[in-house]
Image 1 (spheres, rainbow, N blue to C red):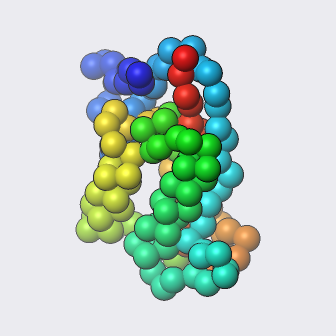
Image 2: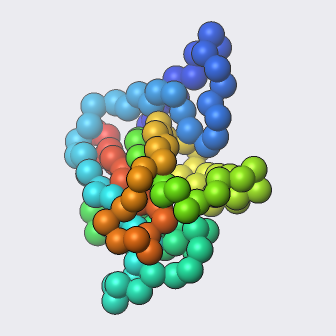
Length: 134
């Protein structure tokens, strides 16, 4: 089981994330490469939220192929392009999707705005580390 570490002498987490996650001894680790909002045909939906939904679906497919679920995720890396205007409203919508997918306790996470992704249509890329414990 994952144990979050959010010490009271640190600033509270600024989204659905934990400052630290402790797991018992790992039986298996799954490293998920960055996933983007592209379907199997390479089609990319318009808009940040539509792409984000597809990113989580792609990550879910990889987890399922390893007989894991989002509950196994202990870390995510989030990468947004400058085209994403991360307003308060968009942030709330994104965090709602993220929290619904990842559950509780939320994993550790790093969010970066990057110059660009490999394909200029891509607005968001997310990678993950999942753990199955003994």
